[in-house]
Amino acid sequence: MDWNRIEGNWKQLKGRVKEQWGRLTDDDLDEIDGSREQLEGKIQERYGIARDRVRQDIDDWYGRQTW
Image 1 (cartoon, rainbow, N blue to C red):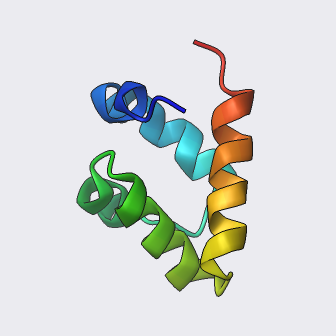
Image 2: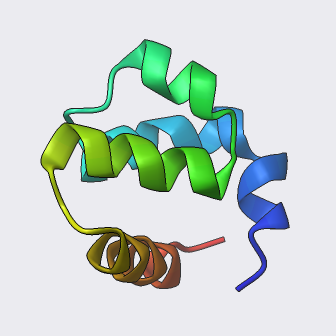
Image 3: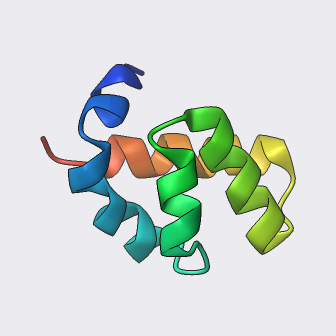
């Protein structure tokens, strides 16, 4: 997975991230600023999901994105 694509397009992708993980706030998304580790941590915090599951969910989400 080329996460650099996410980091480079974070401003445009914040809406897609919020659609998928609606419990994330705009402040969360600003703080994450494209960092996968930050995204994993915030999803884990907001949803109470184990890190392995969060990683898989992010991978699945990333795979569904159309560029």
